[in-house]
Image 1 (cartoon, rainbow, N blue to C red):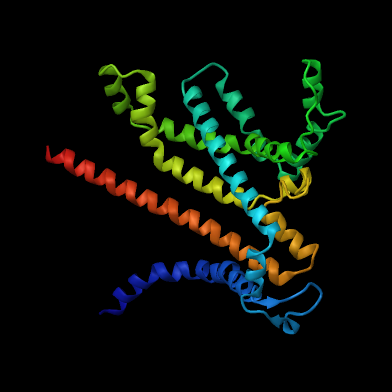
Image 2 (image 1 turned 60 degrees about the horizontal axis):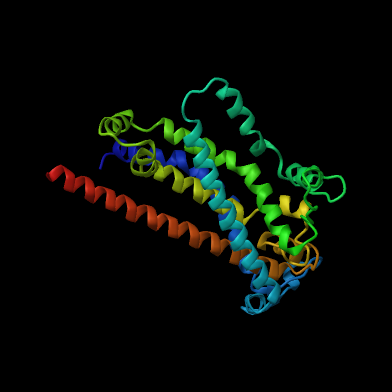
Length: 305
């Protein structure tokens, strides 16, 4: 093989090498260090060299801990609730607002503002809005003749309150992606459906949603990953309370590391959370591959006829 040919083949890898080195040190090294630390009894304030090897002791302790079990269920409930509701609201709003309406540009700009606000600010805003004494929500309820609701002080209402705040902030993200997907749909398919007499609901169910599905799967995956690692909003609004009613795993990791000073257990908790996210990502990846293969088979069958 000629030296010129070898250089031509190696050129792309040479350009990618700096990014690969940064990736190794910025991503793989911390994950590896975290994995190693999870097998040691390591406390804050002591060097890692003094840590005692614990094997799978940290993982065994966590899996048998009632607090972890409750936080696990809170995390699952929170993540799936916000993603499902945000997908329904975001896609629904995109379907409603895809048509050109006067003043729609201004409305879209205002609508996406919540996702640009820092999570800490979002937590503070909703904490004041939920305040039982001077919060605008309870004031409005009293004005309409309803009793005030202990939004953040009741275990029954705290988690729904946090879910509402997250939906308010991140529904615009789903809306933007859904609207972009709708505007990129082939007009020919929609025109053919109208000519064939398809109603608006039939066009949405049989044409728009299936064609939007690749974008919706990516949007749902991104939101699911982000929902599993949300921290600031819950930390500011409830700090995991009352009790453990809003303590998701990311908040439990923070408290384990910086309140209890158990760095080894915090590392093990982080690995468990990472494994949960990877499992969900793998499931959605497999679903996407199965769906693409099914579409390819249908297209091949249609071409034969």
